Amino acid sequence: MKKKDNKDYISYTRDNCRLCLSKEVEMAVNMGKSPISEKYVDKENLKKIIPKVSLDLYFCKNCYHVQLLDVVNPDFLWADFTFKTSRDDKLIKHFEDYVDRVFKVQKINKQDLIVDVGSNDGTLLQCFKNKGFNNILGVDPASEIVDQANLSGIRTIKGYFNLDLAKKINNSNGKAKIITANNVFAHIDDLRGILEAIKFMMNDDSIFVFEVSYLLDVVKKMLIGTIFHEHLSYHSVTSLKIFLNSFGLDLIRIERGPEQGGSIICYAKIKKSSDTIDKTVIELLELEKKEKLDSIETIKEMNSKLINLKTELNQIIKKIKDEKKSISGFGAARSGTTFLSFFDIGKYIDHLYDDNNEKHYKYSPGDQIEVLPTKLINQNQPEYLIILAWIHADKIIQKNQNYLQNGGAFLRFFPKVEIITK
Ligand SMILES: [Zn+2]
Image (cartoon, rainbow, N blue to C red):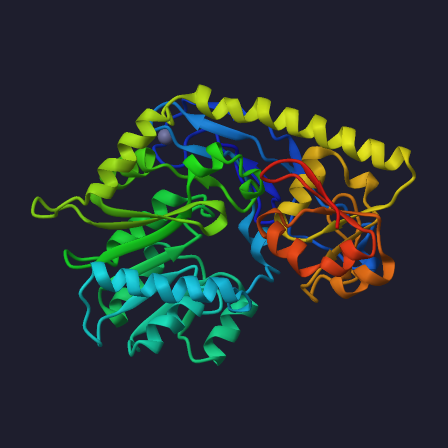
């Protein structure tokens, strides 16, 4: 492992698997370097260079885990992280449903401790609280968001969850009955450290529930929008089972869901001979075997599909520019930067339009494209709008019928390349 010589480093490159520490890791998808994607800057800071870091995907030949080996310094990556879960209605609905699912699997008393790792502004814990469970505790490193959580009555500790912090929490709160971690398990470099800490917070009656985007969906549906610097791991049940077992935990149940294009909710307990393993675990292990997720060749197929997609998209955009038509982007989310960089199309894009007012009149990392409020779309009427917020494409098209009626056209590239007019 390359030394992280000082705390101000931007990124470092691992030389081993994040889950099993094997050095038998081989590159499977060549994504190249991309600007660190959440760093939208003000006009005054345009001269500041946003570093580019590799997004190549590696495959571990020992435990089959798919992962980035280039890790951006989390202090740099998350310091001014602005996404708040409470801003997303769909996510709130998902969390309400999630809490009901957890209660179906885990018996719990009102005074039992519930810990959420990577708790953001406390949206998930609020759902537990709404059901009458008040012994809740969140942990998250994003300072501004933690302050907000505490202000809204969700007890939250600022920091990275590790064994030291787990010991402190345990000293004053005891063991947790439920530990959750949603879309954070894929974001942590030191997964062995966090799992050790999670296990420390558990006893025989505890359950650890976590949700991650699912590698099988990433591969099958070509979810390249899920590949960005924050997203270090692309989990399969096969590699997760090996990982959890090596810490004395067992996967007892898994549910597939639609989040992020395809996710799995995993339930784990401390391994005991009396536990029954639900058939959902066995079925997914068999499915992954059938789909050859344990072969690097399966992951490498994404590479050739990506090159084809890039060629097709560039031909279309070149034709649009040859006809002297204008093109802007819809969506200034993290994946947008990855797309512009990977497809190498940022130079053709006049503006980015986004609903998030914290990004308005800032400039995208890398191509330095100005972000404008979506209400200006009808005023500016770009001739083409490429949908970078890939996961919301249907909703965006539906909500912007005016733009189409006025002669605009959407260009989408997921699930396939398509031009949509009125
Ligand atoms: Zn491994």
